[in-house]
Length: 285
Ligand SMILES: Nc1nc(=O)c2c([nH]1)NC[C@@H]1CN(c3ccc(C(=O)N[C@@H](CCC(=O)O)C(=O)O)cc3)C=[N+]21
Image (cartoon, rainbow, N blue to C red; front, side, top):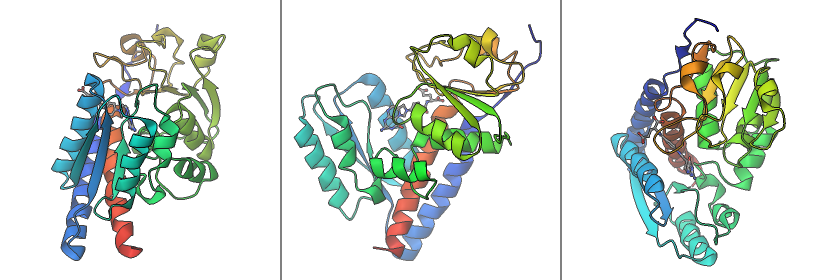
């Protein structure tokens, strides 16, 4: 067992600095154009975790001088009802960004609901438009958690070129896009997931590991390659990550804590892209 202690990747501090910059940019937009950047938050149902996340996003908006407009919908809302609501926000000139909190309930076609977000308001990076732009390496809004992860890697000067990055998880707004962003930075990417056969052996080869399966302590610390960079994007009940942190920290060189790692970065990127969406509207209304 290695006795080194990994350096912690402080997402709270970096998110605070990014949000300070966003607050200044929001203030600038208000002064120059008398327009207040506004994020609409759409929440279907009252799942306690989702309620908490959306409140955190609104609170962080308020701190940055970004207005938020909350749109709560009953859990029973239909796909067409939700699409109608999101479409109205897409057409509302006072709204610059739209966040539709995932998940929306199994009876709803979530993809159809996401696609009702106008591309220029997709500050959460969840539409096909944003995904394709990211895939082609074109400018556009990135999915917030993957975007936050890349910012953290850059902040800690993690060299990705030629490195083996292993992504555990393949969800459309986290695992899949983060692998594509890493590939875009010349990493060699392996995707794994909950049903991968022989996962530990693959994890042991990772120079950079991104855990995004949504299963508490799914990644065994003993499988971390000594010196690896470990990004824990898991958000499980009770603020437990997808990585067995206490073991992993003795093998990794850099590791994100949970809480205080990836989570705050997700929100920082959401706010930054909201201000960016408002600024772009000024240039090209
Ligand atoms: N359309 C959509 N976009 C999302 O970005 C999205 C989503 N749906 N659905 C749910 C997940 C989850 N998510 C988190 C955001 C912040 C923290 C966060 O800041 N967590 C704190 C701790 C929170 C606490 O103290 O309870 C931390 O890690 O330090 C966690 C999780 C965004 N998500």
